[in-house]
Amino acid sequence: MSFKVITHASELLTGAGVRIKDGVRVTDEDLGRIPDGALVYRTKKVGRYEVPDRIEWVGSTEELPKRWKKIPHLDLRGKKAVIPGLVDCHTHLIFDGDRSEEFSARCAGATYEEISKRGGGILSTVQATRASSEAQLVKLGAERLKEIYRRGVRTVEIKSGYGLDFESEMKSLRAIALLKKKFPQMTLTATYMGAHAIPQGRDRRDYIQEMIHRTLPEIQKKRLADACDVFIDEGYFTCDEGREILGAAKRMGFRTKIHADELNNTESASLAAELGALSADHLLRVSDRGVQSLSCSEVVAVLLPGTAFYLKAAQAPARKLLNQGVRVALATDFNPGTFMGLSLPSVMTIAALYLGMTRAEIFAAVTYNGARALGLSASKGTLEPGLDANFWILPFQKFEEVYYRFAW
Image 1 (cartoon, rainbow, N blue to C red):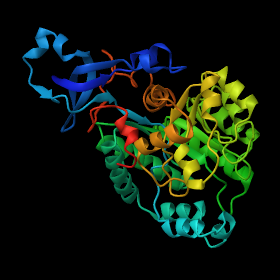
Image 2: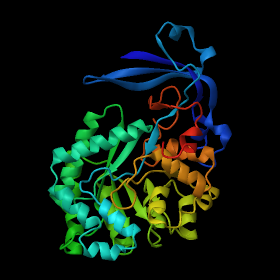
Image 3: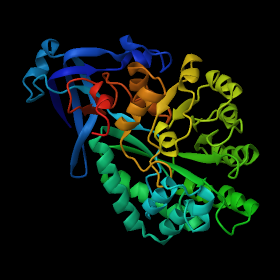
């Protein structure tokens, strides 16, 4: 264990007020903006790596306690800001295959049904992922994690869901476990999402029973996932099926999440509230009832504006959710079909322009509320003594530049 000191940040945003308000109805005053900021943190050894561990002190450089002044400093010379590390709380990072031709066809007017008949869509990714080796999935995942790390993400959720059979889902989750060891400077959480779709050629009830009685118990035994997610929508899984799968997962100790009210309103946001899920994600078609249910719960609404942008669909009603006191997070939803993008800052830009979110709301959505959507907000999401030293030294002088400069 050793200690590190950062001084003369152009500004340091602690987000302390966001934590005090538990991520709800945040304002600019909650950002905890410190001009000429300084940060002291301790490190730890993980294998051959020395990685940030815990925050010891935060304040202005002028107020830096004497005991830390003798330690060599990283002097940012007023040219770079420091903020909490970003949290991407919804990604589908583990898959193989290339669907760029499909995207081109869709932009030229082909429908999803037409593309599916040609062997495209999710089935194309499933076939490629099943054929891929575990080592190849790790290689692809590592390349993607390096890219999102450069864009400020320090905590990321990774879902399975492109295997859709026992062997391939286990392979995907093992790949995530290996990535955790390769990236000790990041926090990776794994979510089992075998209920992404009904695999081609499988009996519906048989597949659901396999997930409940074979796959989930094996994942629990090997500790390969932190949570379980179900895609509840027309053509995918029903609310009753979601309740059955997630109920079983919850009894086994998994946290729960729902792909909710994306393509159609199924009142799955209300189901997320009923089940006490960590999050309800997408919410493009959430009803007033669903918004009310979320506002009376601890569920985080994870909005994925990049996906709506990619699909040229109406965005989720962010202002309605925020005004009702719902905790809102933002994530990329990186996936091969509906958002092939790893830049959370670009998603922040879309949220500012098309969701009408304020700077404080965007800040909270990619830090504290993102951590809350993963059950990690007790130790992550703000820069305060005693919390994890997850921070990002920006290449800019101000936080706002992160999303002002689109696709940098």
